[in-house]
Length: 313
Image 1 (cartoon, rainbow, N blue to C red):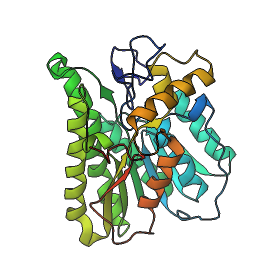
Image 2 (tube, helix red, strand yellow; image 1 turned 90 degrees about the horizontal axis):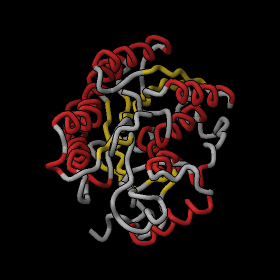
Image 3 (tube, one colour; image 1 turned 90 degrees about the vertical axis):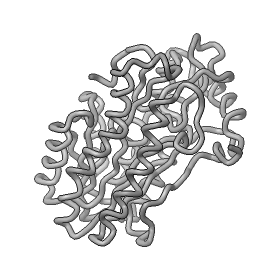
Image 4 (cartoon, rainbow, N blue to C red; image 1 turned 30 degrees about the vertical axis):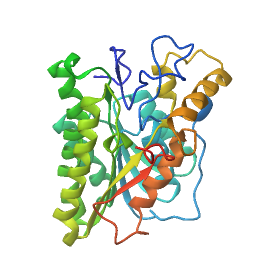
């Protein structure tokens, strides 16, 4: 199923919620789900050239859900730091554009269309990238969706869709990544969870269950493979501002200044610490930190980057 599918109440990666503030003037949509990602003000993703850090030089990096938002920002940064980046997503036009952007900036990247709900797709994606670049060293498992509604209104198919993408999709990614990481003598895995795994809201039963499940999956995988040199950690972002949120709110045709004012107003109430949303790039910076060799004693952990959103919970 395409991520561009306009089915009611489903938006991949996250979705606006029914709270006040941000919804004013945007019809029925209001609020923002924890961990949504968009580029501030609707501006295009920044062109990031080669970095002096080069922490991923000579490394093969795999990213799921990288055609937009946090995944896209991370793929660009991994390549800028020397990584050979293989990434997937369901929207081929966006995947091709991200690959073009990375190559234009002097990086190396390959897009493979894959849906993490499909075991065949996941295996093909992982094996294709490992074969092309000669192995696998770093994985950022980031793909996810949400459906917002009261629990009893979910159909079984909708529940399965969210759990299948967010939780089962990560299981499948790990299942086919780990053999390549073992063959390489170790590596790092970062999994995108959400601040909803810590403190949630009404209407997010499937999403919250999937993200809390990911924390357990990460902890177990960390223990399963620690002695073989594989570290596995959870990235726990709060509300992150992307184009997707703006589209979900029906605000794509609004002037940037109007949308920014709505987002800022929402954050003042719902992010009690910094009182603003994160940018996708701000979260991607932490994904790279976890994936790097800078924290060799860190595994099975949860790194929360939410601007203080859950500090009061």
